[in-house]
Image (cartoon, rainbow, N blue to C red):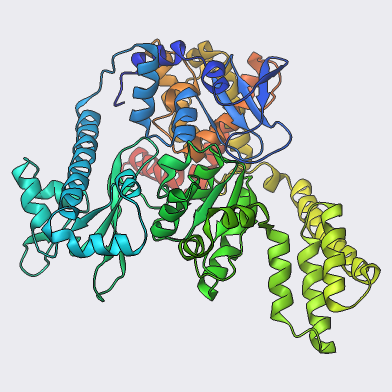
Length: 582
């Protein structure tokens, strides 16, 4: 392990899971566990469980689970080493890092420092002779000096090595500029040159205040119009949002999601400091999860063109899945928020924001525009599609309200449309119930892990392996009786790996707990192992333990026979006994 196991155990002991989680989630005791609303997905009924005796948490809704370190990783979007450092600082502990992690962290620190120095260089260029055109553009867009300073806007000169030369002079290496995505190596000549040239520069800052990348807008007609940093050790565009470092502190009750940097910046300048923008990519589940940590409501303001409308339709279910309430703001008389604010001002925008539509109203209006409701055939098609859409709304009152609106738009009675909506709703619920019944009636499916990336090939052995692990976690001294069982005999590699690691911890005199294995497994794997540990089981007994062990050994022997391994070994032994070879 990169961090000494004894150090991790001490760190976990000093940071009880209930205290760590309790800083983010309101927990209430129920029996031996604590429960609260999951911070990782939206829910109204508490399905998020914390087990102080096991030092683990688990959500029965989204299946996330682990120990205190994994919780900090998830809630603060930190890597495992950074989560260790985070809790160590709070506990007053020094972190004994091995060379591999120290090297990686030093590389991260170098890239953060380099990116920050690059932002300063771009800022200096903006206010120098080379930045005149970019400054004129900024003035034409109506940005104040305060806004330019707040967002650290800069300029990349129209040259091949301006930034490169400046950073080399500061002691950085060419390889570091390549690693930070600030430079490119020519495939033909092998020379290194600046990635960003003749562009207005927008530093991208993460929620902890580190400069992690850049967006650059070209100052001429060359393509692409906007260029973003590539994926690097410190920059992942799927997990970061432009201006989130500012918006997370906003006192406004929503976060406004826009398409571009300039839209987000304009909104901030006019007092709407809750605006963010995606980084040249479509909205991702990671973006939605990040947003859900800081707000309960997202207002989408995408462009009114077809691409913008398509992006809106794709974004709504992603945001809702993260438990966010979604509203959609339609701009009238302007193509984007920047233009609207210049034309009509902040008060008009605030009024528009307060009247933003929820996604059902937005979808219904789009349907209304899609059909010519003066034609009977089109009205019929409209009503069919509207009934299907309205049937997906979970609340009966919402279905009634939007059903009445659709009926009015098509010139029919609410009662007639309600019949169609109810039919569509019953069909959908019936399909879902049948699917659930199929799962419930199939033990082979029911007992499979909730995480699709994990699958049990031998369900009988896997159930015994789960039961054995639960017993070992509850009573580690049983490891002394587990022989001749080995991890290789487990049918599920994930369970075998957990067995091996826990066994090593036991014989090393360490805590036998999943909380100390956070570095060894992916979030999905640890979530599943936590679910296994949370399952109710019979009382520990020698008979049950022996049964689990026997089933695993027998199933492993069957698997070897099926593969032909034992038959070949038997044939070889018989040949040797009879004294002939070949």
